[in-house]
Structures are given as C-alpha cells and as structure tokens.
Length: 382
Image (tube, rainbow, N blue to C red; front, top):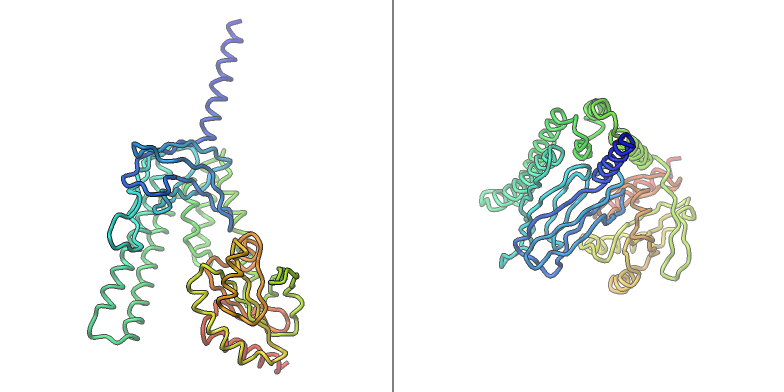
C-alpha cells in the first residue's frame, strides 16, 4: 500500500512538473495605460502573426497572464499597442514592467528599452534587445548630427549618413556574434541567429547549433531551427536573379483569376503593395510614368499585387490612385506571396524576363525603367 502511495505521489509530481514546463506566467505593471488596455503575446510563424495569449490591464495598472506553449520560441510581448519587447518563451516565468503609452506632447518613434526579469535565457534576450535599442539611438544621433551640419550639401550629408549607418549596423552585428559565441549553449540563442548573415557566418551558426544540441539533449530547439533555416535558404535561393519566378494565381478587381504564367513571353513588372503603405503610394506616380511609356509595347506588362487584409481598403485605394494596369489582391494579407517571393517590406517591385525568370528585385524609381529596357534588350540578343 505504501509503495502504491509513493508511486501515486511521483506521478502527481511528474504531471505537475510537466504542466509547469508547458506554461509560462508573464506579469508586471504598466505606468501609463492607453485606450487599448491589453498586453498580448505574439508569435511570428513565418509571415503569420499568432496571438498566444492576451489580457487586460487592471485598474491598479497590473497585469498577469499564463501562456501555453507548444515548443520553445521567440515571442513579442506588446503593451497598449505602443510598446513591445522580444522575449523567449520556454521555461522561465517573466516580470515585465512597461512604461505604456507615449505621454509626450510631441510624439516621435523612439520607444524606451524594456527589461525582462526572468532567468538566463531571457537575460540573453535583454542583452540583445539593449544592443538593438542602442543601435536605434545611435541612428537617431547620426541623423541629427549629419543633417544639422551647415558645411555639407545634401548629397554629402546623404553619403556620410549612409556610411555611418553602415558602421553602426556592423558594430551591432559584431556584438551579436560576440553574444552567440559566448551564450550559444542557451536555447534562446537561436533568437539571435536570424540577425547574422549565413553566407558570412555559416561556420559560427552551425557550430552554435551543434553545441546547443549537445548541451541540451532533451531539446529539439537546435534541430527545429536548422530545419527552418535550411527551408528559408532554399526559398531565398529560388528568388535569386535568373531563377524561375514563383508562380501565383490571384483574383483581379472583377473577381477573375489571373495567373503569372499567362504572361510568359513578356517582361513583367510586379509591384507588391498595400493601401496602408505610404512608400507604396509614393512609388505609384513612377509606375504610372513607366506604364504610359510602355503600355503600347506588347512585350511589356504591369501587375500590381495588393496584400491588403480588407478588400474594401484595396478597392478604395485603387479608386484613389487610378492605376490603369492589372490589379490583383493576394488573399490572407499576402502571406503566400510574401513567403514565395521572400519579402517583408513593401513596396517590393520585381522584374520578370520573357522566359519567366527573375530579372531584378527591389526596384524603385528609375531602376524600374532600366530593368524593363535591359530585359527587352537581353531578349533581343537571343
């Protein structure tokens, strides 16, 4: 009887331990609470944002939520839709105190640093987050110092600022490498690896993943990340210039399906955009100018692919912009298109040659026209 009770006790303790490992408690205080009184835990799954947990901030400005996790992962914890912090969700409870909404009379995009009170895995995220925070502060300081200079013309200012930005970013990457080299045994280190360039840092990345796997025998974090990384690299390889452009079929403004494959034999300019994207709207006059120049050329076609979540927003923007070429709407906020074409920011403009291959990417302004001309000339030489 005694042995049965001992066994039962062990089972209870074991099940309780397993349950504790599958949940993480996140709590804290918010100094200034806005109209949106929520703290949310968001996971980015490829191009999809998944809300893992959400709670309202109480009248006493405190919050607390328990998040169920399927597997260890990096998450973004947001507060009042005005502040956020990147954290590691695995086996460490967290206390995170937010400032909350910006109370300044003149609001600028300069969010304060947020510290995570947790264990060593999230302390590594604190170090990385603080480095990113300082990198952003340095960029602001560079901009102010350069553009306030009275002895430089606009081109000189732009060139100097670009060089200083590059130096600042390389310094940030160097610090990330340092963190990876010295904290690679922590599973949370995979959250830092995405900031590295695999072409330059493949040895460090692979060594880190191998060490992580060895030192965490019960974890699949390293294996999972390596699989995701290889998948991402393969998709990026498919998007190199000269590779066959990923096919897609989306509906036009009449609800009719339009396939990219149907334009084979033409030079195609594809503009991925959205109604809410300011830079996208600013680029449209350039596209209109080049469309007017080439609209009577049977070997050239223009496609605009919106990643708007709401069809009404897309139609409203089309009516405002009056774009005469083919307009398509990618479903599910463009997740399929973003995954296939491997872009996160818009506008993303790509030129496809007559053979249906990627000719050039990341086009803006005059570069769009140059890509059309060069692609046409290339086809004439064959």
